[in-house]
Length: 468
Image (tube, rainbow, N blue to C red):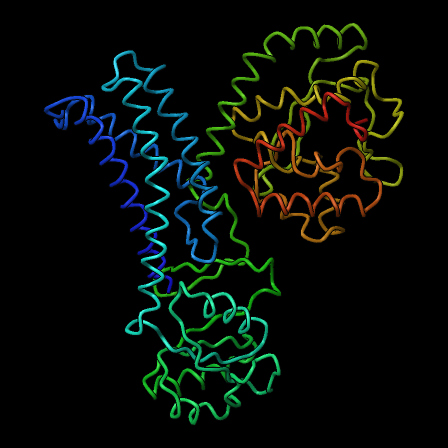
């Protein structure tokens, strides 16, 4: 079914691009006759630009994922987001960047109206047609599920009962009879040969635990001897979050237990572009005039440099130099106390200067880190980087702590806007921070980054309770 999913996604992409191209050409033909179809014309370049823009916008919102398990309302919301971004980008390019564009505002508006009306209709029709095709008696596949554990029941509920996948249940085979099978129990795994002989089967789906490898081998051998196709669903949920990805390396299959959104090159590019654009705006519009004011206040209230720099761990454990405005007295104080533990900033910490307390409360001390973002060692949003001694203390004491370093550290993060910032004197607080960071890494979206930025600004205006 993976190949079928890829085909369906490609069909959706092709139909979308075909409809967008047809609408743009149709509107152009209505206003200008004969139409300008030269491959070297400005119109042809504009048409190509619109198609590429739609493709990027739609992919960024997951519109070309396998959505057969999702209701159309989910696809509709994805379409609205993609269409909104597409309209924003194309209108800006057409009427702000270029003075002479091949079509005017009325033509552009008509294009957008037709796209908004016709693309959703096309997607509904495609769903209906594909559902009819999959449920045709000629293409329905009778499936036998070997293993009535949680994995087998999930496969039945999500893929057999769901009519978009074209499966029809023949029954379950398992060593124990489960009352929840509602009469679909056909026998034990040792009776598989008799079950196959009594039923007309197309596929046998094995959902047994990977610890029963020898038994799975026997099932595969027996099924293939009877001419039946076998599909195996490995149960690796106890190793990770339940998400996994299968890749091919030559003749080998490789299972990634925790595939991340930022493993995708598209998502990496989107996040990096946003980091650069947002950081440039902050540096040019805010930092350029605020820097001399803060620098002067730091110099007037305490001796020492304006900036404080510290080595921290970045992406994949690589050491980075993190820049901040100095908020503590410049002294030869050690980073660790008498017990050898890292001395975190605490409430009423005597090391913090008068202006330093304000900078910490409003998070203005973090502003120089936008330079880190521009140079690529940090991101605007991500897990906050910790000082090296704190990393060394926590990596063995907190489970999955080092998984925070699967992503570039950020100026702000999901843990921080949810209240887990500042001092972590109790191990429990560090565990909660790590839990929030890992959730963000595994569930990253562009819109989540925007949400965190808004929450960070709100918290900065209110004053961070735990920032000291």
